[in-house]
Amino acid sequence: MPASGAPGVSPSAGGGRGALEFQPGDRVAERYEVRHRIGQGGMGVVYLAQDTLLGEEVALKFMRPELLRTEKARRLFLQEALVTRRLRHEHIVAVHDVSLARGGVLYISMEHAAGDPLRGILRRHRTERRLIDVRFAVSVAAQMLAGLEYAHRYVIHRDIKPENVIIGANERVKLLDFGLAKAVEEDMAAAGAATEGERREKRRVVGTLLYAAPEQSRFQPLDHRVDVYATGLVLRELLALRTPSEPLEKMGQVRRDVSPSVMRVLEKALAEDRDARWQTAGAFRRALEEAYEESYRPPASPTGARASAGEASTEGMAWFSGGRFLMGNSGVREESPEEEVEVAPFWMDRHPVTVAEYRVYLEATGAPPPRYWNDADCNGAEQPVVGVSWHEAAAYARWAGKSLPTEAQWEFAARGRDNRRHPWGNLSPDSTRCNFGEHIGGTSMVTLYEDGRTPEGLYDMAGNVFEWALDPFAPYEQIRKQPEAAAKTPRRAARGGCWRSGPGELTTTARRGFFPETQSRALGFRCVLGARV
Image (tube, rainbow, N blue to C red; front, side, top):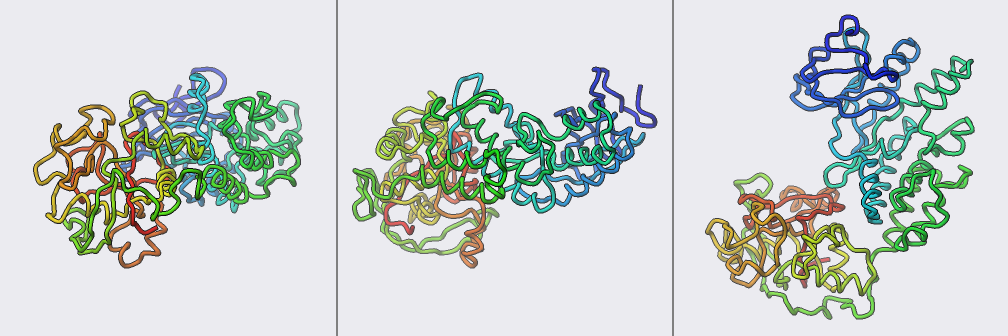
């Protein structure tokens, strides 16, 4: 039976939890059109909806009916939602508004964080018995901690767990459900939790016991260090694929590629005595990032490495004498304005770095393999190495005594002195010149397309894989006039299009931006010698 005065709203027929049920097309407050249900938790149920006023997708979270019956709980839900609404951070799902639908149904409208719940990722890896890359685990934890570092100015989460972490495009982390559990706890504490049933409810609502800090289970006064502890448990699970209830005396029981310094940082986060833990989320994040960088960055001069540009080999590279050329395309916003720039002489790899070449680097340095390293469809010796972040690509280049190319160097090499539209000339792309448009469905050998070579002898400057550039991805005008501001942009430039690209991304001026942590099947790199560092 529909809730009073609320068409399309009815208690769940599924017994017990009292979740609300909507059908596709139902309207909420005349503004939101429901699409489908996307989640359910202890506090309520979440639906994907279309904001018909603004024309964008949102998530609507409805409070459980049994909590709605308590006026104090309703007030605290509203109060905490308003606190959460203040949080504006790239790693926190934004709350837009809190309101009442007809019939007194209390709901929150928030950003729809598209992506995979971290719990699902962990479950898949456990099912496939496939360990998660240390880099990914550290990146997820560091992004969680960055969000918490900001949030702790206003609120304590108290329910950090994989279910409340979303991994979106480019491995961007978003945290969900700030403040709600805290509000319910304080409400029941104020009421005295007089009965055993209320005490059980209090224990159940205040976070998830599996990820609770020792002081939570002892019902001691809590502070932000409970979130530090819970994030440590999430990182432990990412590295070991074991939940907090599963014993793990030493990480070496499961894997041997987690460095001692990373383990020391994790162990401190999991100290039973909160005074012995990292005292802030920021301190935990910085220590973790420093430990990872220290442990996994290739040494400056490993045995057999070419430690400087003067010693690096130019075998397999093409020479460019440099000079002035017209860079950019005023007809495309991301590529404008056109401007004459000058590049110094340099050498450039004739093709993207291959799997075989990257393997030599891994064996020489002991660096961890990149994502997709063991995937049969992209690990052929002469295929371009993929799944490398900007940081990993830059580390390889340093080891080789080279650098990633600047955008100016890359475009100078692709465009040539004859101002070509495409690396091979001005003829349109087709299947004889490059790998694009998914006509192969993955990467190809780096020297496959002879007809697509530049006159200078460079392969795959269009299609196959996007190639990391050294520069930040910012408007050209800002890069040229405000280089310090441009350097702070979070993305890095990439050039050349990939096997998925349409023709528009295969020009010599086309550019894209990716977060430096991105690891994609369509993203590789090549090196230059003589670049600025």
